[in-house]
Length: 186
Image 1 (cartoon, helix red, strand yellow):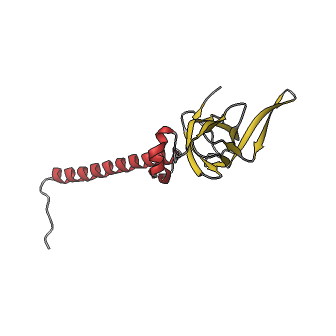
Image 2: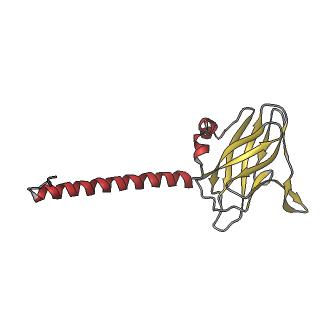
């Protein structure tokens, strides 16, 4: 077998530089793809949720699986670092039969509870509700100072502009995913 002789040292140099440049380009592409995936994952939306038809069809309107329900202005209060709770608000419109909100859940908190605030002896008090009625052909307002969702034991700070998916579970209609936007309302 005959060895290949390179007659010009510049040719070998150019080949080596081409190989190094090719690898450098490949590494940059891999880094960019990894960064894009990390941003996607850290953004709080899993690949399954992002790719689901319900999410794709309804996320822009903040209405996912919305059939008889409409979910208007869903938002959660931004939190300073170290805070373990946050309140969330929205309006639930119901064009169907009377139903009840049984509970809520989210990856944004270890627990999500239905709460109400009321004045007792000149003091505002907050208490947990077992369920929340949603009247037929009606609207339930979850607002500051009234009914609201309470995120309990949140693992990360809620940053303005980010979003979190909350699953609302109704007695008859089942589960509905709603995209809540984080707002700073200081």
